Structure formats: structure tokens, C-alpha cells
Image (tube, rainbow, N blue to C red; front, side):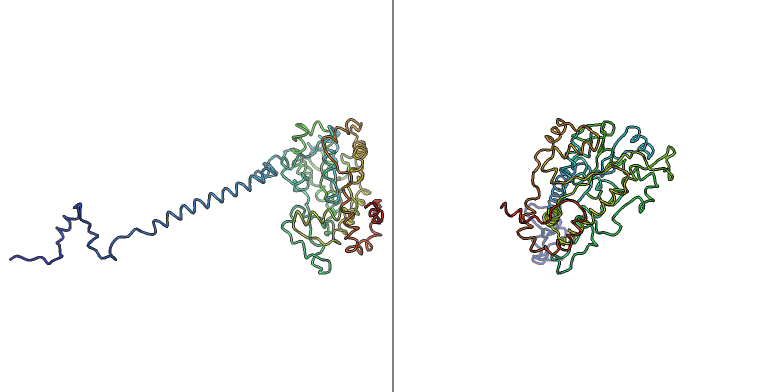
Length: 423
């Protein structure tokens, strides 16, 4: 009996046979819903990978550009850290080397924006004096030693970008002296480091070696001075504004009486000749206050109450005068105004103070390396005070006038009539 095949039906053998025919597509017999479609996931996966790749290329490029920008500013230290170049001398090796070679360590301090950097640049240009190199060589702004080391605090200076500078306006009372950083760190409690209140550090010989091992490579080799700075230079100079509150501590540290066995002689008499000398920089209080105010606002996008700046200036100078009287080391003062108006005369006095060559040819050679020095750096600030600031902050000057005068810095605070007559 013959079984008829229903119309439109094929047996499995026929399907299997015809599946390989060139003109036959089995999918055509399926309903539209059953037909195979191109997977959307495969396309999405390709798009996602391409996006991922491009995103990562973009991120790496941006990160590389940022890293390169900071490398151009701060050099290898931005990648390798400050401690990579550290020496490994013992405390006694340092004591013996400094004393046997009659080295002098010049410590420069003073208010921020008072001219410490330009004076330091001039001093270290002397052929018998070595200082740290450029920002690229040291990896820190203005090549300040306080930003390089880990023995004493930087008092928040250099970290101001992370801070809330307060609410503008004295009337709002949003700003206090409890915050640290530029323009107010001298008002912090316990900011004044001395031989007495940091005695434990001065009884530990490792304090000496830890600091000098960090500073040594930046004295020993610089682009401008060359190599063997530690041996060839008669004077090693370190500049940080905060040295103004660290002076007696630093005197005790650099002159630490380390014995051959590596211990500190706690019964040692004061040294007849210290290896340290101190140079305090200062500037007219009105001009200095405005200069710090301008720097904080324009370079840091912050705010510090004007009265806080006044008080910080006063307190810092009081600490410097206090330390100058308490130290065994020689110390001298230099005014930015004197240096700007008469750089030759100012440098001659400083070089004589340091017992290095101070003849006219040497001083002239130094100034040629420094370049242009503006003769009146205070003019715009004093003019701003006379035209606007006196009306806004005149009560502060009245309130602190006697305190300013007690500092005996010799600055004229009643200068507006004379200044305005020339305008």
C-alpha cells in the first residue's frame, strides 16, 4: 500500500539530502520568528571594546601629559621621590667632616614674599658658596630645604591648596589663626622650635645625619656650581622662610657634639666657634602683607584675613629677634629694600659676614649671574595702601602701631603724604 505524502511535507531523509543542495536554504522554510538573526551582542561587544580602547588611550595620554608637565617643573623627584639621592654618612662622619674642613652653614629665614629667594640666588652665585639647585634639580618649589627634609615640620606651607582659607571679610569672623600655612603659621601654638623644647631631637645623633644626608646631594652637585660642592665650597647655604621660627633648634642641630662612638656628648660646653651663621630677611610690613595677600589669592585661590597677615608678620619677627639674642651663632639682618636699591653694597656686607671674597669684581660677577633686580619692589603695594587700603584697614595699623615700632625695623609707617606728593 502506497502512503501518500502530504503536500508541503518532506521526510527527514529528503530534508537531509536537500539541505546540501546549492539552491536550498532550510531556514526559508521556518517562520520569521524562527529564522536566525545576527546577534546584537556581537556588535555591541565590538563597540564596547573599541570604546574601552579609545578611553584608555585618552586616559593614558592625559595622565602622560600631566606627568610630563610636572616632570618638566620638578624633575626626576616627581617619579623617584626625594630620598633616592640620600647620602649614608654617620652622625660622627658629618661632625668630623664639617669641623675638620671648617665649613660654614648659612641659614636664611624671614617672611614669605620678603625677598628670601632672590637674595639666596645672589648669595649662592658666589664662587665659594654652594646652595641647592633649581626647582627641577630639587623637586620642590623655590628649592627650599624645609620642603625637602623630614626632621622638622613645614607648618603647612606648600599644602595650602588643600585648605579652606576662610570666609572673606573680617566682619564675618570666618578666618582664625588656628590654621597653618603661608601667612599665618607663626601664630600656631608650639610653632617656635628651640633647643629647649625640642631637646629630645638634639640628643639623638640620627637627627643630624638624617637632615644632612638629605641636604648633601643638593649641595654636592648642582648644574650651576658643578660637582664636589661639599668639599670645594666654604659655605653651604639653605634657605626656607620658616627658618625664622627654627633658628635656635637648627643651631643646636648643626652644631650637635657627636662623639667618635656615635653618641651625643650631653655635657659638652658651648662651642667656641659654631659652624652656623644666620641671615634674617625682612621687608616693609605693609608691602609684605600685600605681597602675601596677592600670592594667596592669585596663586592659590584662597583667602586669609588681612589682620591675620599683620599679626603673623609681627609674631614671626618677634621670634627671629628672640632667637638672634639667644644664639651663640653670628646673625645679621638684610632688608629687601636695601638689597633692591643697593645690591652691591648689601652683598658686600653679607660676603664679609660670611668671610668669603667681597671685592668689587666678585660682587659684580655675582650680580651678572642674578640678572635684573627691580629697584623699588614695594611701590605698587604702598600706593595701593595709600589709595585704598588705608581706608579699609587703617584701624589695624592704628591698633598694632606700637607693636610694629617695638620691632625697631626702621620702617616708616606714615608714608602716604610723601608718596602721594610724587604722583
